[in-house]
Length: 450
Image (tube, rainbow, N blue to C red; front, top):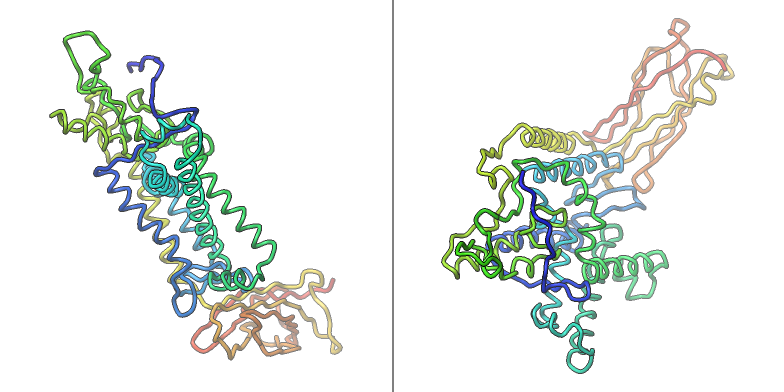
């Protein structure tokens, strides 16, 4: 493989280490907005939109419940949410093998908020070229006002983001009521301040440094890539030698305008080859395509291509590695769907007392003790009944009604034996019913004294 020559890149985007991103338009930027826009709206809608008095998503620690689109889930159902995360990870790997860091460029929250803050910066302080020219000038007059306005809008956007994120754990209307009545606790206030500061720093001041230095995906993406992975690539065979750089009669299609560098959110030059800083957002493709249109050259000097495509070699998109990740993604997605359909509104846990395996009552009968916990996500569920399914001769000693308090209850259940032919170990089941809903839990009854 031919190595890219080492050279010093002269870029006009970075002044004093700061990258002034030039906004561009094109098919990939439209695609990015089509993907990131609904994700941004969903982030806010999950908290602000309510269904039957409940937000679409709420992690209620006090009640030990998770509300998801009107469906109440117990903490025992967190495995379903874990399955969703696993499926999302498989989707990330699937996309990385096929098309590189497209998640980072099109759907990552860090990128979405960074682009949002860049637009605020462009609205208040002007285009990137103007900001770059004025970077070293004294901060005074109208420029000072614009700078202050920019940071105020950044802080406002960060605060709204932090409030919404807090609303995933505290109902947003309850949160605003606490703020209005000055009843917010120090923990909640500290959390809001911390999240606001982190959003302001990450999206406003740090930006690309998170993608380059802090994001772990930038580090292990090389493990996911192969020679058939489609990533944003520069066709050096077509573009070199660049116009204005080589004193020869042969000229490549690259006019050396540096627009691909100016629009890059991480400030790299894609013409230097594949770099881990590239987030595959496609901004350089749109900028280069616009230049090609003006110069009368065909589009695609910069495009999503694999190394094999650049080398004019066969490059199948569907290959065993990609299909393998796709199969795992499908299996985990089906498991999550099955988990949602198979879940019950009642949760029953039975723990046998291990400190005293067997004890005797005043009639000399051998008994076992159990701790029975019942939890429901249905706030209106009542009329619970508990029964035992097991060998003849077993009977409860202290039957207590199951009364729910805040959706859960627990009681100590003693089971004794009057059957002299009962084996040393017997399988039993605890059954809880509430209307048409029934759940059971297996346990054992043991004969033998401590």
